[in-house]
Picture 1 (tube, helix red, strand yellow):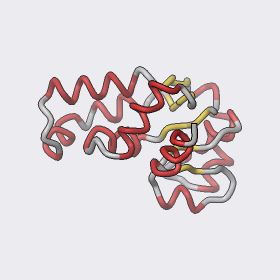
Picture 2: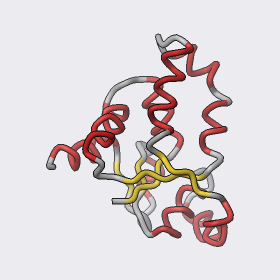
Picture 3: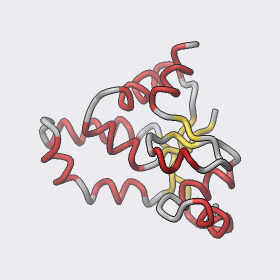
Length: 138
């Protein structure tokens, strides 16, 4: 199953190796999901490295290893591939419009813990707990 991953999920997985990180660990083993994200997402997360280090107990090397582990599982998609869907996506949610646009373009759900994103009705949004439940059924 194809899923668009939003930045909050990756940030959460790096801050706390809880449910969100477990999704990436289990999916690496079982390969149930194919993760995609807008290409700019990783540069946005990398800009927050100092913040990440201040809110975790991870060392710089541990954070880098976790980031690489997650990044290896997510294919990045060029903005030009889904930019035509941006106007429709912006009608639904301005903050997360690129993720919605990519999901609309690829006709797939979004993996996110963002409650506001889940309130829009056009694209299904799965929380980390819901993804873990799907992985556990296999």
